[in-house]
Each structure stands twice: as C-alpha cells, then as structure tokens.
Length: 95
Length: 492
Image (tube, rainbow over all chains, first blue to last red; front, side, top):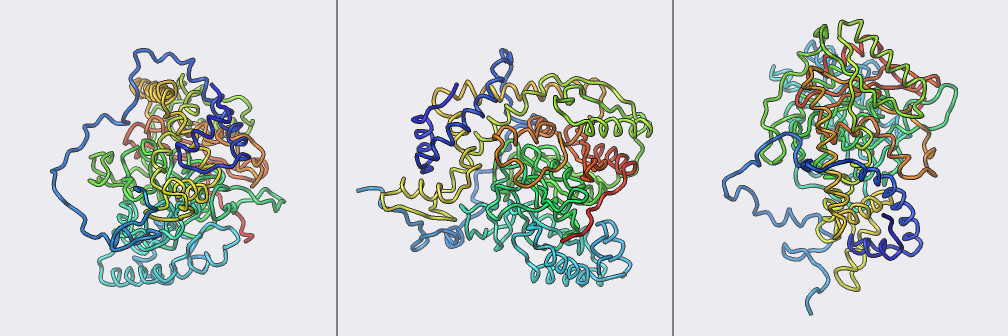
C-alpha cells in the first residue's frame, strides 16, 4: 500500500499537525519508504495467532474506587500557556 | 580532583564509608567536570545548587551513620524523566518551559536511596532517534573519536546524553530509557554498560511516554556491577503503573562474580545479518570463546521471526506514539501557537511548531496505521507477529537456554550528520539486534567487548528470560573481565 498527497494531508489533519505543501511531498516519500519496509509483515502466516497484549501474563490490577489524589487545580494549570481561575483557556468552541 | 570522577559507584561507596573524601567534594568534582565538558552537549540543564544541597545532606547522613544504598552518588537524569520543579521537556520544543509538579517513580526511588542529581541529559526528541540528532538542543558529541581524527561522532540514541556523560565521567551513572534499543545502542557506542530490564520491572510513572507497551527505564553505568547497583534502586513495584509487575526486586549485585559454569548460552543464527562488518562477527566469536572458556555451554539456536521484529516495531511504536503524543495540544502545557481560527487552528499550529521532523513523521505513520480501514492490516498484524517473536524466545528458553549472546549493534558509532541523507529505514536498522528484546518484553544488557580498527568501542548483548536480570549481570561480568575496560581519551 502507498499513500498519495491527499492521504498525507488527511492524516496530518487527523493528527492535528499543520503541514505545508512542500512538507507534504517530503512526508509522502518517507511514509512510502516506511510502508514499503513494513510490507514484508504480510508474508507472515498469523492465522490462529492471538495478538500480543501483554509481555507477562497478568491480570489487570484492580483498586478500590476511592479518591486518593487531587484538589490542587493550581498545580495542574501551573504549566498552561493561558489560564483563568484554575481553568485552562482555549479559543471559543461554541458559538 | 580527577581521581574522584574516575571512581565507580562501588568505589564511591567504599571511599565515602572510609571517609577518604566527602560527598560534597565528590559532587563538586562532577560539577566542575560538567562545566568543562559543555562542548559535548550531554547535559542540557545543570543543577549544581541542588546537587550540592543533596550532597550536604549525604554528608550529614554518613556522619550520622545512616547512609542509604546510593548515598552521595552523583547521577545524570535523562530529560524524559519528570523531575519536580526542574526542566523536563523530552528534548522537545513542544514542552517548552515545562516544569513538572511531580517526580517520576524511578527518580524518586534514586533520591530516596541517597543519590545526588547533577542535571538533565540530552536525548533524541521524545526518545525517537538512534543518533541524538533529533534533539531540540542539538546532538550530543561522543567523547570517543576515531584514532587520529577530530570528526565528531554520534553517541547513539536516544539515550545519547546519558551514555556520553557516563563515558566522559560527567556523572557516576545515568538514568536512561529503551523502547527499541535506546539504552543498549548508545552504551555500545560509548564503551559503557546499559541494561534494559524486563518490561514491568521499572515503573513508567512520570516518564514521558513514547510507546507504552515497549518503554522501559534502566541505567547506563561504567561497569556491570554499577549497573546492578543502580537497577536495584530504580526498580520497584508501583501502584501508579498498572503494568508494573508485582515481584520483589532481587539483590542484583549478588550475581556479580558468580560462576557461569554449566550455563547454556544460545547463539541465534538469524543475528548474522547481511552486510554486517567482519569485525562485528569477530567480536561475537570472541565473546563465544570467552564464555566457553569460563565453562558455559554454547548452543546454536534459531529465532525464526527475528527479521520481522523491526518492521513490526515500526508499526507498533509509531501507533502508540501517535496516541501518547496527542496530549501536546497547546492547552495544558508547553508551546502554544495560533488559535485565531479556533481550537483546531491552535492544535495544528502548536503541534506543527513544537514537534521536530522525526516526531511528526512517526505521528503521521502511527495515525495512518491506526486509521479506519488499516487497523487490521497493520497494527493487528504487527501485534500478532509480536506474539510469534515472543514465542521464538519462549521456545529456546523452554529448551534450556539460559541467556542469548548477540552483537549489540550492526556497526560502531558513525559520524554526526553521516546519516543526514539516508532514508529513515537505514537509520532504523541501527536497532536490528536490540528491538526484538523490546517486542518480547525481555531484559537485555549491552557490555563493552572491544574496539574496532578505528579505535571505537563495540558491545555485545545478552538477552535473558523474563525477570532474570541477575543472569545477565553474572554473564556480563564474565565478558567484562575478559574484555577489560574502555575509556575515551580526554580532548574536550
């Protein structure tokens, strides 16, 4: 499988990364090189093989549904580029 | 003071206990060494005041007879580890100005054991790279050079700052992380010891995530014993990481010096790759001879799915990265650009300005392979191939093989910018011997084993059973004793 210019633009938009037309052409070539490289995986017979989901067989750890942490909104927003009264500020999203 | 920075961690422990020098004197020697080594670009943030305050506390503890296991040992910390109130950017512009309000579990463990923090170490951006050239802070220069040459060499990546700093004696040891070879390849390129423990051995909490099913923290150290000492402190069971495995941490140092007599060492035929330089093959044969001489039994083995590990990795790792890196949105932390045309404009412009080219490329690949219609063909297929890679290892371990010996890298360190015109896949081939270990979640250690004809270090890799790091230290020590130690000549 290979990607065309329109696909690279669509994927970049899905990934929320602005790209220039010149960048798109560069990424297209590189993505196609990588996709060509990984193509060899299709020759492996994986019928009856389960996908690997964990390295060591282990049960998902459960914990009590209790509040163990929190109540420091000022620390949470301390690194944000724009905040007000303990909230993150973003451009208007609802008209 | 140069003698102080030449001490291993084991040597520091003895010297401090005997009162030969103080933790403050030792830390000051490192602070001076770091300052003099700025041309290497290994440290991107120096924290001398914090280091000296921690050393003063260590001196108080030593005087009071309450020294902890790593009391007064000066360490460098890869910029991927969250350090409370101190610059943590994964060497990316997207995290510009980020100072975490919390400390990673691994570094918390080290400070609780008395270690001293010297600063933050350079690395490839988000740990994506094999040469340290994707760092937003510019590449690290390897303290090693080719004989008779001034050409700057790569220290490898992504933990290039960690490896270079340890090799150049700018810290007694360093934290590092390994997703596809990022501890072992730079260790091999700098003549240092690096171990990636079993997945789940070190907590990932507070480590900036790259590919969550592959990422593991581990140390880079001067020798095998120091690596064992550091891993003991770094490893823990942590309720904050659901993949942290609930097993007690053994005393790895106890394995140092134990006999390897009767151990079965597997030699996988699939690691003899096309185009591999003659000297790598010779090094491998030398390693086999050393272990045979020490009484180990050498067994030829086959790991038939080896060649699929790298392509599977380049689906799984970018897929997970594209998901993990979605959090850099210009809203909660780091760089913010645009927004005049709404929230999507803010996201797209912040991410375009903040991420470097390699990171963008991997996010795009990851987004593509996870997008509608391609998930089964790529991601699911790769995860199934991963099961087969893991099964290969399980089969040889079940047949009685204790550890597997391979070269660590397909070449010695290459020149900075030497790969500038190479395709991404050529750069990815650096990880061909190390990436299988991450895919299967196993522990792997790189131990220096010799120099190539140009005078650059080369390493051997040992791969172990899950949670059997002790055997890697035991066998690694035998290689180290046979090969000797390698240090770069100081030119900086």
